[in-house]
Image 1 (cartoon, each protein chain N blue to C red):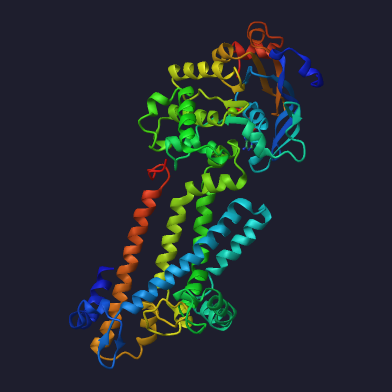
Image 2 (image 1 turned 45 degrees about the horizontal axis):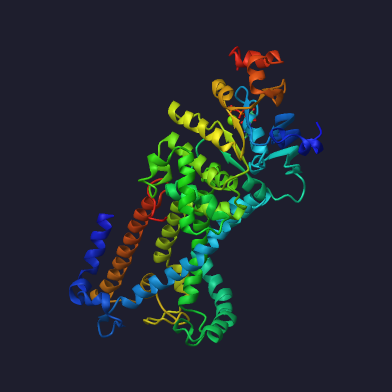
Length: 284
Length: 269
Ligand SMILES: Nc1ncnc2c1ncn2[C@@H]1O[C@H](COP(=O)(O)OP(=O)(O)OP(=O)(O)O)[C@@H](O)[C@H]1O
Ligand SMILES: [Mg+2]
C-alpha cells in the first residue's frame, strides 16, 4: 500500500506542486486552461454516498429485521439468498439496468413528483434529467444493500436470545423487544455495516459513472447531473494528456483514497465505542 | 381438583395459579409430562429436582415464555386467577406483564445503564414521569439489596457489575413493574451467602402481596423460605413429572414418595 501511495504521489506530483491547496477548494475543471478544482467531485462523492446510505440503511435494516426476526423459517433461506445474489451482479450490469430501467423511472414519475410536491426545497428544483446525483445515490444504495443487509442480519442473529427474552418477560411486545433489546445490542454491528457500506459507496465507480450524467457542479439540486471523484477519473482518464491533467486526476484519486481512509478509521472508532458492554452514552 | 370453589376458601389458601395437565416440548423433546398443581396466592412455592428434570421449563410455561424459543410448545391449562392463559385470544404480552420472571442466568441489558436496566419495564408500559421512575427504581434496587452497592453508579453500564450484582439487578428489573406473580429461576446461584440471605428476606417481604415461585437446587433454601414444595423428576422417557407436592415441612421431614426422600437426603440427583 505504501508503494502504491508512493507511485500515486509521484504521478500526482506535477498537479500537487502547481495547483497547490487551491485544488481542493476550486470549483472549475478546465483542462484546456489548466484549471483543476476537486471540490465538485468531492461534493458529488459525499452527496451520492450520503444519499445512498440514507436510502440503504433503513431499507437494509428493515430487511435484516425481517429476515432475522420475523420471517417464517421456510422464507429465510431463499430471501437471504436473493439478497446475497444481488451482491454478485457485476457493477456494469447494475449500471446498465440503472441507465435503461431506473433512470427513466426516476425522471418521471419520481423527479417530476418530487419537483411538484417538494419543489420549494432547493434539493428538488431544476429540470428532471433522470441521470444525476439522485440516480447515482440510488444505484449506490442498491449496490450497498446486500452487504448492509447481510451484516445487519448477522449482527441481529448474534444477539443472545436471553436479551430478547429479558425484554419479553417484562411484558414487551415482539416489536418492543426488537427495538429496545435486540437492536441496541446489535448496534455496533449495524454501525459497522453502515460504515462499510459508506466506504464502498465512496469508491464505487462503474455503475455510478453510467447514471450520474457527467456534470461538474456544486449544487444542492439532486436532479442535476454531476460526477463523483471516481466517475470523473473513469470518464476522463483515457483522454487526459499532459503531466498536469493526468496529475490532477491522480490527485483526485488520492483525495478519494484519503477520504475513504478517514471514513474507515472513524468507523472503527465508532464500532469500538458502541460495542455492547463497553460503555454507555450518558442516558438516564 | 376443582378450582371453582377456590374463591370460597380462606384467603391463605386461595389458588393464584392452577396448572392442569401441562405438557411442554422442545421440538420433539418432551420436557415435562402431565404436570398438575395449584400455586397458592401470596405464598412461596419452591420447585426442586435434579438437573434437566424440567424445572425451568415448568416455570417458563407459567408466563408463556416457553413458547418464545424456536420449536417450543406447551399444551394444557394454566389458570391465572381462574383464567386460562393458554386460551385462544389471550395475549401473552399481558400475561407477562402480570407474571414477572428472573432468569437462571443473569441477563442485564449491556447497552443500558444500571438505572435504565431497572426502568426498562417501566418505560414499556407506564406513563409515569421520570421523577416517579427514579423513586420506583430506587425502591426496586433497595428491595433487591443492591442499592447501596450501585447508588453511586446508576449511570454506569449494567453489564459492568459482578455476576451476583447482575442477578440482583435483574431481580430489581422484574420487581420494578410490580408483577402479581414472580417466577425466580435459581436466583441465588450466583450470589454469596449474604446476598442470598438478603434475597430470601426480600422474598418474605414480597410475599405479602406477591405470589412467588422459585426454582432452587439448594435444599436448605427451599426449606427455609418456601411454604409449598414441588419435586419433579424425569421419567423413563426423560420428561419431567411431578412426583410430590405438599407443604414444605411435610415434604422435607415426612416425604410421601421414597424418590423425594432419596433426593432431599442427597442420595441421588
Ligand atoms: N432449548 C432447548 N432445546 C431442547 N431441549 C431443551 C431446551 N431447553 C431444555 N431442554 C431439555 O428439556 C429438559 C428440561 O430442561 P430444563 O431446562 O427445564 O431443566 P431444569 O430442571 O431447569 O434443569 P437445571 O436444573 O439444570 O436448570 C432437559 O432434558 C433439557 O435437555
Ligand atoms: Mg433450569
